[in-house]
Image (cartoon, rainbow, N blue to C red):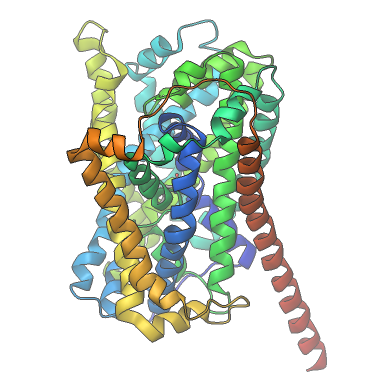
Length: 517
Ligand code: PHE
């Protein structure tokens, strides 16, 4: 390879970029809506189990593949000798186009809602009518084009000047804003019920096989796996950085944002007696209908609403950047095109691919005399989200895990532990080879059983989702809060501080070596 491969400039910059791709609509839009749909705290159990048992390993494996080959997904799978490597890797280049096409549409709504909240446009109005009105207006086209233009522009600047620099500003701001909104939400009178709903697991919810399938899709989605993004981002990693510690820190850092988002949303929604609306709410409900209602009725709603959507925009844009990057990397690596040209071309293609989703929402509005419901207007988008999450992501993410476990073998394990301060033991081998596939298989089988023997299955495991009844904060709720927040925030902060510490020590050592020499 004649051209010099781009890399992240600094270790912490790399972590911000990684968390930048991870934290996005998945944390603030998708995670709370899945929690709402699958019984609040009940969803946390499959989510945490699959995060720790499967997804973190998926992330390490994608980094291993990316860093050891220094290629985009097609070249990477070929180089490690995976059967039909190029064809399989192609999904890591093509898949992101489909993900981006609808992801950026939701990002566009977010951009509009920053302005709408700050100006109080929906205050005192029915939020559903307001949202429908927006989908049928020209603004949705403007916001969509602006969002695509933004990510293409950042990407035309490259890895260090573009991605790393943008994320270093956006990600810390996102966390600060998220904490501010969560504190506001938790201090509203009546917030407790929301905490209880959000943090109390109930057996019936845990035994629901569909919740496990949703959690499986979600853990891959939230860690940006199965889309080539992490393979590419891994290929920009330096060999001197340890993979395991970074993977733990980034996964828990990402999850801490999801947990915070839940604390920002549920207490406020319940405080304003919107609990009923939270339960079983489909895709758009929570973020674009319930929350605006919360902002519209809470003190300083304009400020907090504006801040909330601003932070969501930061998260969504930094993720969208990483979804666009694989195709640009492919054009650079394989066609030797300059970055600018690839960024422009992908931008145009992605803009065109997003139009059907925008138009679906736009035309169904006027056609039926303005009476089309949200479900119809978003039918296309929700279908695409399901296909991508139930099929697209898990498939390639699993293949990456199997590739390291069965194809790269010793080479893969060596790359995983290369220069790592905290090394992973030999148990990782059977884990990647057998435990992960079995876990995933179990989720799929349970779902088939539930599909085909619905009632018998439900009777057997008692998985009928109960309605929400308020019983006050129970000991179980307290234990869940301590365990979940402890693991997630402890892991994130501990991991991050260790990385910073290691970097400092290395810098000192390098300095003293310099002084000696
Ligand atoms: N992880 C991102 C989010 O949660 C979405 C994403 C998926 C980004 C796959 C890149 C690849 O919003």
